Length: 363
Image 1 (cartoon, one colour):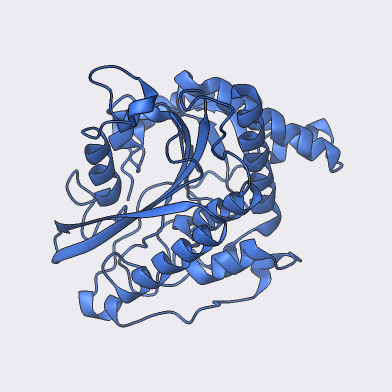
Image 2 (tube, rainbow, N blue to C red; image 1 turned 45 degrees about the horizontal axis):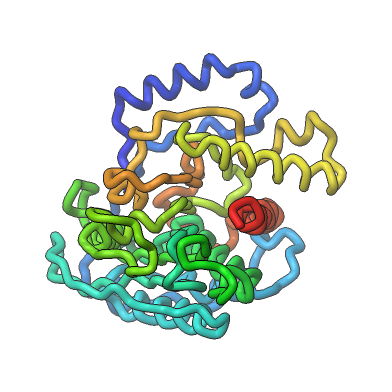
C-alpha cells in the first residue's frame, strides 16, 4: 500500500520530537508503519472465497447501537479485490445506497493491465449538483488488498461507510438552485475509488489504478460551459477541496496536518472535535490525550494514496489518513472486531459538522 520514503520519515520523526510537549499528552501507540510480509495467494482463491456478509459481531462494537453506519460497514466488509465478484457486489451496494439518497451516480469504468491479469475497474462518482461550478469532494477506496482472509475494515470499509452516512445526512443539501448562478453554486461529490491497492508490490504502475485514471480523465475534460472558467480550464478546476479518508476505525486512529495549503480546514476539524468532546464531558487534559485530530505536521510528500494523482495536478487536498498507520494495517485483524465505534462515530460527527459549516461559509 502507501510507501513512506525513508528520508522523509526521518524528517517527520524529527518534527514529531520537536513537538514533544504535545505528544506527552497523547496516547498514540508508537506503531510502526512498515508493511508486514506480504502473503501471496492465487488470483482464483481470492476470486472464489467470499466472506459471509454481516461479518463478526463481537467486542468491536463497544456498546454501539446499530444504525445505517453499522449496516454499511457490514455490507462492505467482504473480500472485494478489484475484478472479483465481491468487488462488484460492494460496488452495487454503494451505488444503490447513493441513488436512494437522490445523488446522480456515474461509473468511471476502464480496464488496465496488472501483474496478475487485465482487470476491469470502476470508480463510483455521486453528485448532488453535477453542474455546480464548485465541488466539495469526499473520497475513499472501496477495493481491498489481495491477501487470503483480509477484509480491510479500516482499509477502507469504514471510511466508505462513513461517506455513505454523510451522503444520507446531506441528501437534501447542496442541490441546484434557480436563484443562484451555477458559478456560485456548491455541489457535494463523493468518489469511491477502485484499484487503490497493489496486486503485487506497491509501485507507480501497480497501485492507485482508479485515482490515476480519473485524475487523468478529468484533466482533459472541459467543465460545464456555464462555469465560464476560461481557456485551459478542466473538470479538475471545479474541485474546491478534495478530502480523502483512509485507515480509519480503530481505537488508535489519529490524524496529523499534512498540507499547509489547507491547514485552516484541518484546524476547523480540530475545533469541532474539541467542542464535541467538551460537550460530552471531557476535560481539557482528556481532550488533549484522546482527540483524533492531533496538532502535528507530517511532510505531505511522504505519503502515497489516492490523493496523489490529483495533488500532482494542483487540486487542494485535505488528507485524512491515519498517522501512524493503525496497528492492524494489512493484517487479517483489520476486521469488524477491531473497529472502535465510539471513536469512529466521533470522527463521523466531526466530518458532518465540517461539511455543514463548509457549506455555510461558502454560500
